[in-house]
Image 1 (cartoon, helix red, strand yellow):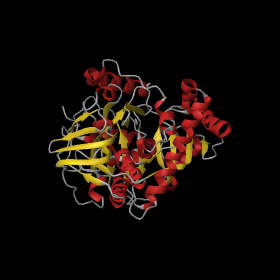
Image 2 (cartoon, rainbow, N blue to C red):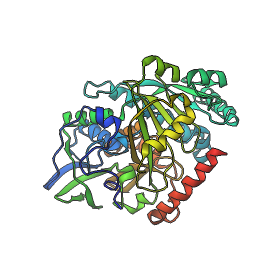
Image 3 (spheres, rainbow, N blue to C red):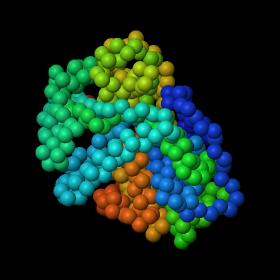
Length: 433
């Protein structure tokens, strides 16, 4: 089973709202022949594009290989939320790695949001950064934890960008009876992810990166220099950066044992009036709720509600994604029963057992950075920058991330599909309790 093609056509973006409205790049050529470079980057998502860009800016000769199109995978079809913090809350990280290490992880997470905001300001990135993400608690018993978390970030980390929300405040900001409180991260935000990825590609090309599309890597030899083989090309590289996330396949068994692909789904409504948009979500914030099978939603620049969520019990996309996602959308916003769905699509992301990114040196000259667990717009982009600085000899931030333990899934890649089914059934049930 090849997740690159099981749900999508080779060389074509999925039928998403983003793809329908993007300022597309001309296709890049397929890699062919014998090629040499300083660094070969595998994967044309946020991690790979950011790594290639930052390496080229440091003077490295970079080749980027993408099996489909740049921004084809999760990077170009996700919810566009640029979340603050790591995927695990600081209190949990403090228990796992201690306060000093947790503080370093917090700083890295803050830097990831700053980097997306900084890159989005480039004239080559045609995607605006909109501020504000609301965390919405779908159970009243969760509200105290959210308020304690906000207090902890302010008092322990000096973070002034978070504010607790009570029931009245959250229902003013999000017009839904489903939520009982929560908090707002004022300096987090949201962005069109495909436009952002295409902008990174423009920046990378301008910096001298050679991008090849339709160039799936079939083999990677862990030698010095490394050898990377596609169907038509053999690339010799001093260093390799792997940014494959949910589309790794069996390219590396060690990473595949720790990063499991799962699917998620999004719909885009017809355009609503600005007044109706404001009546649903105040001040153009994004929203993510407290369910494990999370609901996340925001408005596009042309006033469509982009609503994501729902569980999946396998790797093939449902036949009717729109109907599947419309159900939780109407649970949150029953007042949208009259609204048409114009786009519906799915995508594959990579998760880890503890939901923290998996960083690994596969060899002295080969780095893998993946498993962003739905938190990748910011952290995957920063991971590319971290890969570049690590190759340049500054590995401090890489080591901070790599030293967070990410254990293999039980049974490794062979049992991922049955594990996925059992896990999603369990968490779907837990969200209903």
